[in-house]
Image (cartoon, rainbow, N blue to C red):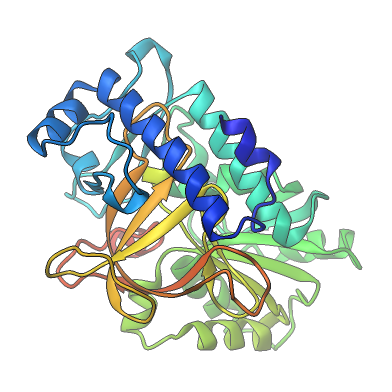
Length: 359
């Protein structure tokens, strides 16, 4: 069935068509994981939910995302697991462990490629990774931060890291790279807090436009918790980078290790968009009923991709507001929303937040 999702435009399916596709695929995944993951079966039995029930997506059981920190949840034998992703966690905190088989990893990468290419085009671009090389040392048990870098690296060619392993800006290396690719569009990728702390703040010490990235496209995600505590808004983030290095095409994204690949990209209007591969539901924090547009609540994320673990319907620790569906001024179909941050008292575990806590 997954062929249908890849044949569709990423943001072209309106509500009725998309919900029909999602309901069929998510029901299929629920039945599969019920049959192949004993822990998941036990939870659905405790809820007295039959996986044979044909119900709307909003009525499917959801797991709290924190559950992946407490137990191993896999729907494939160990010998089929090719990679274990770990979520970010500060020192002493448990981390999620996400078991991927080859097929799930492939679908995640293909979905990510379709989503990102719809924003930056299909041509691979010279790429600057706003991070350090050491994050990719262990390829078998890779962190969410490393997985993000690996996932987005497929969109680049002649990639370089802007930071060394001491998190210092390699100014001369970046200068040489920009000189070599003068006049070309440049793709930049990194995690929000780390970009601000280790790239932008270093540029602040230099004359404006020491690095000219006016031809750059920046994709970034995670880490808003720390910036909000420093009173750095998304607008200030964009303005600061524009003044320091001239970069103006900036896209935030919302995603997590527990649903790698099905990211929600930020459009030109500043809205996060679900794609053909994903959906969001906002739930009231008091009774978990579904919230309509404009009401703040807990974000539930749905993805058609997780085949090796029961991660297709998860309740996050984030607060958000649904803004609308199929009517964003950018022209993309699907739900669009904003994220306000972590639920109060929830763990801070963003990919770049946790690096800051560690140092």
